[in-house]
Length: 144
Image 1 (cartoon, one colour):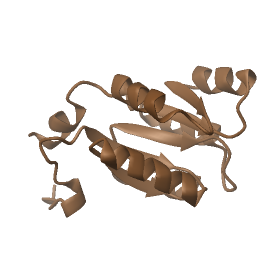
Image 2 (spheres, helix red, strand yellow):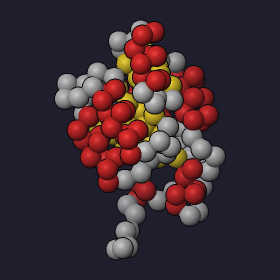
Image 3 (tube, one colour):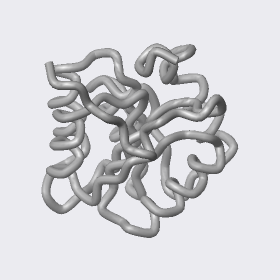
């Protein structure tokens, strides 16, 4: 296997908590989550739609995925089901502006670890992400 040189963003600092992929078609949502999570010492990657998100997931591994439910190119539930066919371990938290109990139950049954409605409570989201991540996930993947 060829040796891969990590980019500056992939080199962990001692404070790095994990690597998170955000898949959401709304730029404001992606950017606000990126700022919030970066301030909490997560390495964050962004995908503006389901297709790009699935491409990133096929090429790389993440410690957690934040996945929008409604995107123009593909439903977040479809992405969730595709990911779960290949990967049962990576925590996936669904986020949506179209929150309902029925949709939340459907997402959880399809393999989501949790479900947040927009706008979300930053503190609760940070706690859930911390709880969902396997202990030492970043250091196990990077060998640090």
